[in-house]
Length: 231
Image (cartoon, one colour):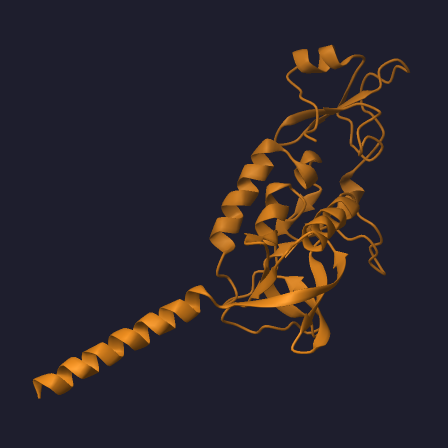
């Protein structure tokens, strides 16, 4: 009897180890078909080309039929493109819920050479945490931590006050008309959001930045507690 109990124990132990191994290594390797947008790519999966929508994040649009191109959309698209086109290995990790959305796109965490693209986009401020539909929430807590750090640093979409909100991106909040110091010689725009950031005419989003104060020199802006946008 003891021998049977021991054998059963060994069987359970091996089964558990195999199960854990499968959980840890549940990524599926795929090949890139083409990059599409900041949060979408196309891959070859199960013998056919399929679109993959990155789980739990949302990047600004570049060619939406209704929304058109949004600020930081091209930056997000180029960043994702550079990652997937230069990757030696691309892998998908599915969550425990549905692995397709209503448009037939695969829903997955996407890895390039071991790095998760969602995390990299959030670090750069090129995506926000969004579309949280249980039970596909495996990494939402760590995504929130990364996003809060990007918000604090004021990078990417967080450079522009009220642009990224819980319900999406709001380009209409960006106003290029200054409220103060409209002198032709004072062209540096100061924006007060989570951080004080100033934009010179050479800044990528100078025209779209809402100016809450204007400065004549960068030295003047720094003295007032503002910093330039991070590159």
